[in-house]
Amino acid sequence: MLDLARTGGEARAGATPRASPARGGVEVRLVLGLTLLAAVLRFATLAHQSYWLDESQAAHEMALPFGAMLHAWSTTEWNPPLYLVVAWPWARVFGTGEVGLRSLSALLGVAVVPLLFLAGRELVSARAGVAAAALAAVNPFLIWYSQEAREYMLLGTLCAASLWLFARAWRRPTAAALAWWAAISALALLSQYFAGFLVAAEGLLLVHRARSRASVVALLAMAAVLASLVDHVLPRFQHDAGFIVAVPLSLRFEQVPISFALYPVYQSPIVSDALLAAAAVFAAVIALLIVGGSPRELGGAGIAALLAAVVLLVPLGLALIGHDDYLARGLMPGWLPLAVLLGAACTTERARLGGAGLAVVLLAIFVYGEIRVQADAGFQKPDWRGVARALGRPVGDRAIVAYDGEFATGPLSVYLPRVAWAGPGQRPLPDGPVTISELDVVGDVGDQVGRLPAGVRLIARRDVDGFAVRRFVIPAGLSAVPTALLARATTLLTPAPPGATIVFQSRSA
Image 1 (cartoon, helix red, strand yellow):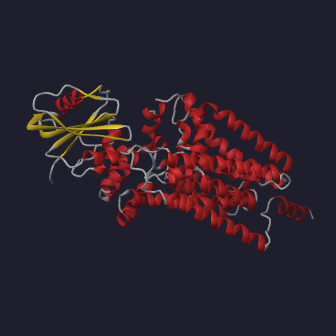
Image 2 (spheres, one colour; image 1 turned 90 degrees about the vertical axis):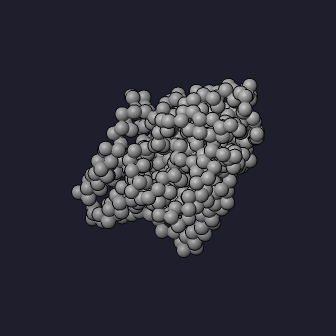
Image 3 (tube, helix red, strand yellow; image 1 turned 45 degrees about the horizontal axis):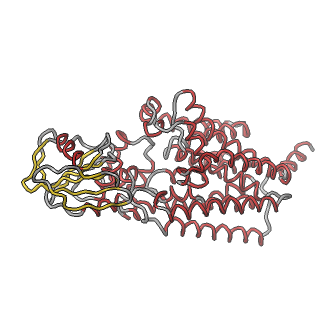
């Protein structure tokens, strides 16, 4: 009798409620519509922005033979290799141009929408799943990384699948459910190390829930996956990334909520109010769940909140005690359970009007953010493709000096023909003299052309997206070592900041 009563109680409190066929059909059609909307938002503007440094690095690596690509990963990349392994054959079919290479991320970004529906439905309710899918479909943060040729949407998709399979195993912790969760979670770990925070939290909860050998084995399998990457990950923990720690941790923490909602509008002055706005939303979520949530909704929302808190706060704690890797895009695994939590608050059984109001507000904020991104070039990637067009065809062998360092020369070496790779892992510059007949400078629009030495003429000047492109011809030719050419260029367009770099382009192959 006790076993029968417990089974019945668990069925009432824990099992997924069976929806009527008609209602289930409506939900499926809504998710299909949201998936189509997500595809339009991600694919329609896929080529609108040019590559930035990290994407140009991926495009460069995708053009290498497979073995050379893996060598480049082991020496220059910070994250595990799964994205490169998946993207390499993709690039062989679709190419390394913006649309071809980014289409993989866009497809993965679209897949997040139905996966979040499944996770929300399993963990909270079908209504919460639809709401979470709607938030994902129009969220600027997810759209941005769905249009970037890097590992972030592979991370997002695999973590969304991990969350769904975790929810299934939480409801029914069978050996098969745990095995599926472990397999997908292992792939998530192989896409980006920050997946480990979500996967570890899920695994510990499953061990506590199931108290079985299978759950322990599944969690140990995750540790084994990470152990296989020890040689690669240790240098990451020994050295902080300069581009991350250059921004104060307090500011990066403030940027997280605004990044999650309006990325990349986090760069605007509204960042200072982001934490206050996030606190207001969190208070509304708690109130809606307490007032209107059923026991199942409260339980599922609580689990989602716990998972999100681990992903967002444990890396913050690590940053405070010494290892600072805290950056919004790395925290993407936390966005997914947050979406389920918000979906639960927006669809509570007994507070539907208030929940609908919160949903409208959140969706309006997301749509506003995406409109701003598409309409304002200041929120978009630098137009290195336009700079490459402004540089045009060389009149002879030339040197190009970029004041933005490898952030410029990396993309330019992808967009300009007959230019050696000039991003992370580039080959050293020649030791001996190089002979050129054109010396070009890419600086800031506020820079001024200096006094030209005898024989040097300014042959073209273009301003592109805040960059000053100035081309100088040297009819008699100039032979000098790269450092001397770099010094000469910085007198042609002033003032020259520190960190300028130089690349060489031949007129013909």
